[in-house]
Length: 345
Image (tube, rainbow, N blue to C red; front, side):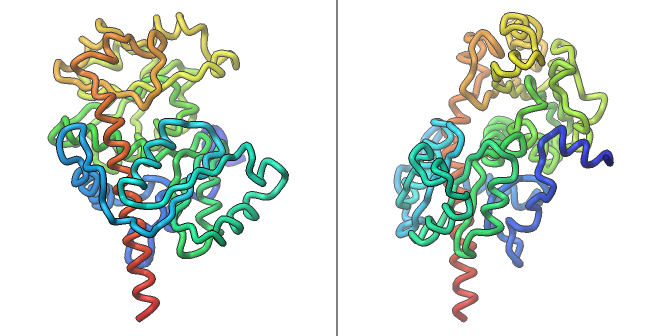
């Protein structure tokens, strides 16, 4: 088994990454499956578009007509109320029609193949599939085989990627810090199983962030993380060392099944050694911001006084989640409309 395959196996990455599939011949966004391999200019375009929807701090204008007459289908094969709700709000604020497929009663739960389900949904004149699935590569698979007029947005696939979460985090950082280049950013928690961390590292690397640190128990740091853009000297198992003088702290949600799999001690032990407390926050720069993709396990990965404190920007992330998803939807539909115009000409 070669080293690259071993790394991919450990990180649960699809063998074929959608590096070119998500862009058309004009390098415009057709699908949004991963931030990996996208250009800094395209990421900045997404951030600029999202920023245009934020009319004032933590407020988004409620109605635009950019997706009027379009239909968005949320295909959530994995539970996530917050992510699904923000995608739904984003689509509705762009005036799209939105439908949520109840997987518990869908044909896939009765033995129909995923591809058969997609073909039937295509016949209903869907324009955008928002896909969340427990298996890495599912959004990629659907994008490859769906009809050309449909765009696929990845709302999280296995341990592989969660690109819209990464982009809303980048928007939040940009709103509070003037530039990515001088920043020291620390990502703390279950790096091994986190699609959020993987997408964040890719986005931070593309935006030329000065220093990307990861902080976790050795059992939760994946083989090959250096290949994602983290230098060996920036990998920490001691949180006190890792938080020293950082500008941004991103806490990851701890999943209890990791403890059941004997990768971690108890919740109390994790909090003791890796929880973000007020004392540990003082190790970072005085103007450091604290982030969390949510939902936060208070008293496990973060102290409530930190989560609700003046340096927390967690609620900003929620608002920015709607704005980023509005930006992505409007961009892929603009690409589709331009493609159809070129074909008509």
